[in-house]
Image 1 (cartoon, rainbow, N blue to C red):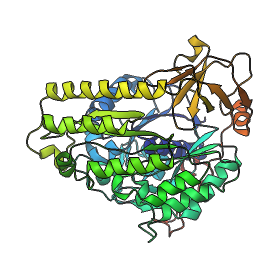
Image 2: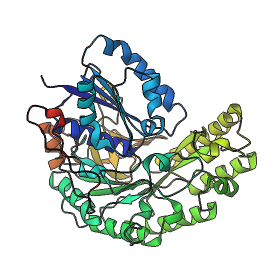
Image 3: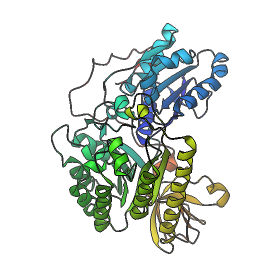
Image 4: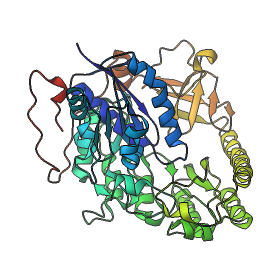
Amino acid sequence: MTRSYTIRTYGCQMNVHDSERMAGLLEAAGYERSGSDDADVVVFNTCAVRENADNRLYGNLGHLRPVKASRPGMQIAVGGCLAQKDRDTIVRKAPWVDVVFGTHNVHALPVLLERARHNQAAQVEIAESLEVFPSTLPARRESAYAGWVSISVGCNNTCTFCIVPSLRGKEKDRRPGDVLAEVQALAADGVLEVTLLGQNVNSYGVEFGDRGAFAKLLRACGDVEGLERVRFTSPHPRDFTSDVIAAMAETPNVCPQLHMPLQSGSDDVLRRMRRSYRSSRYLAILDEVRASLPDAAISTDIIVGFPGETEEDFQATLDVVETARFAQAFTFQYSPRPGTPAASLPDQLPKAVVQERYERLVALQEEISWQQNRALEGRVVEVLVSTGEGRKDGATRRMSGRARDGRLVHFAPGDLPIRPGDVVEVAIGYGAPHHLVADGPVLSHRRTRAGDVHESGTRPGGTATGLGLPGFGAPPAQPAAAAPACGVNA
């Protein structure tokens, strides 16, 4: 019988994209997707950035223990950043887990599952460096209209609060031709929007000696037929250069949106974070972006309560937020992560102090976001219709999607046969802190190939694309006809 699988994904966009690759691998090995936890294989793709990541994983594993005990043959796999970090700890705390694999050997998942079944023993395999670039693997794309495209993996920075470099390794860049080949393949399948992914997209090209490679890549995406929107995440202020801003402004399908982490507005805190820029440099970049793209929506990440943060330091963050006028800020309370330099710093702040500062920051940013969104009332915006982003759409009889600047728009479709993947124009009637509402008539509706693909229930092809570099590891074994779970092109 065909075995079924489900994947639970936690964390960043890189994890979401990795899960698409895991799904592609499993389906290439003969598994079928299931939408529930009664699947034969449950895969957890984990994140290790937040303090409660461990508790969340072990809580979920605990809920599955009796399910697995009642279903002979069921398997549980744990991958991602937390698996890379905890290794054997997962099997020790949850001995009913069958497979543990890391960020560097996603390609091994089907083989490890088969080996665990055959040996009737847990398989723990953590590679110390990248063996197969994820984009060389098959994928099951989640969306018919938007796709993730990884341009690099890993990070060369040494931020004291961040555990990602130790879990994802040093930066490895894909060749531009291979990135563009994947973008072109997605566009040929009807995808209208791609997001270029990297831990630090601005440093793209350093590995192969071209510091201007990212700006060139953005411009090259402008020549891809059928591609209407290009986004990217995340840049690092240290490496943000004028040629990237010019490419954003001069390439029509690059969206007027920028997500650039600030982390703190205090120069002293930035120094202790090893962020290698100061608040004045950060604000100067925003000024340059807005001079070239006046309507750009700029978002950021901010950490509250970093060790040693004084009230003066926190006030400096509030001052930068007030000046920067972010469209949105993802705010986090600092939590020490074992293995990071910041975890052992003195002057760890009391929870009550961090909470109070966090609430002040959120209140300020919500007011700024609300002011910016209300300023858009009456404006006509183009919306790429999506699915799953409007949790109340069924009750409100609305549909949802993203404007070109990335803002979430809820609109009333009326009686028009609008589908996810189609493009509409609507006039904004109301700006809320976190979204825009357009309850008036739809001004225009363009049916797209992406909408056709979504309506058909199919998804863009998950064809593997080359790395453009010598292969990693031993050649893959030839698949055996009687063992479909091993028949994976790694």
